[in-house]
Image 1 (tube, rainbow, N blue to C red):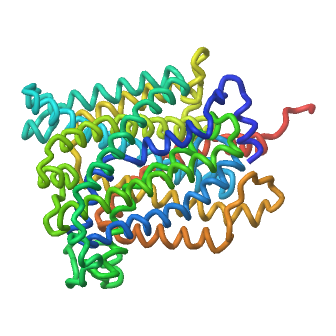
Image 2: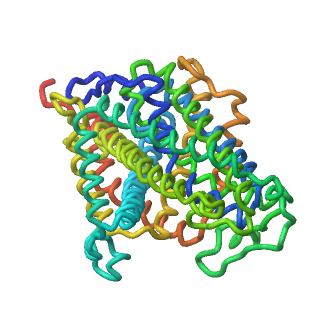
Length: 492
């Protein structure tokens, strides 16, 4: 742990501390609020929870808060870039750190590509509305019905890569402006929608349970395969099933922890940024779900665009366009902050020698890890250009939940092995809180499709091969062990 902190003081591997608690909160809100607030509300209200979708968001927010408290303790204690990777390295050792780092590489890279493709779809929709149409071959594989390249997603990732290379403060300023626009649009929608609420649509608030939902084959949730469990629609159980779905709308607050090394006062500001952004987004999610289920009966809600269609149903299509604009603007910050998290994890792994050390060099002028940022940005841009949104996005969810489990476990281990360590922020109710966080995350993981677990297992197997072929021999610990085994020269 002490070595990790000392590494941040090496000039050629040091990042500049420019971020405040407000910057961190803006980053958190910027990455959390994305398509989830515009899409998931209708899906879970119509299929699982009805008007009680607001309670599902509260339950999911509580599950995230358990993990957030663990993240806050670690980030304030070990203010080093890398988030869950660094926390695992400090508390559990090199191999667990590699596992979680490799997991985060998949999570952030795939999430960035998928979000870029989603942004491209919103922008093409807006362009179509004004009569501008991109050629099908430049609109992605789906639009071309075969070979196609999503030029908008490709260019977005490249532009954001350039912004991240130019410095964290510039990134923070751009994020603040875009987040302000996005939150303003969300608030306007909430306020305007409140005038069209029909309280009759809230009855019954918790619809009566209507049997079960079950899928067959690999698409079945793992919990169903293992225990014969089938997900209930509506009723009290439906609320918890919905919570497992809307949880994914909260993914992103953990990325705030990747900027610990670039925060002016991480011991104080990290907990504020992580918990503050999570609280703000939970309030907005609950408000949106209350408004949309009040504007339109839950049985008639759109699954693809519930807010936009709810306004159309009330005779106000102007707000539908406003929502699409807000979604397009909002996804820019989501994409940029996901890419930021990806580069910081890669940077931390490189500095520890688990990946080539060349990727941990910082730019002499901008003090950013420019090599890893450029390489990852180009790779992800190409992936986004050729990728359509599909079930692979579920890998993002399982990667995040796995990171939550490891961080909570790390808090338990570090409390026992280093009780004397100064902790600017201490998670309350240890060990009960970390255990509850682990249980909640595992339960949500078990509700993911079995094929997602298979793909995740394949990715982790590749990671093990890379670790034993390269990382173990080239890491700081591996080099130290090699030096210890080398006998001293003759005569000494």
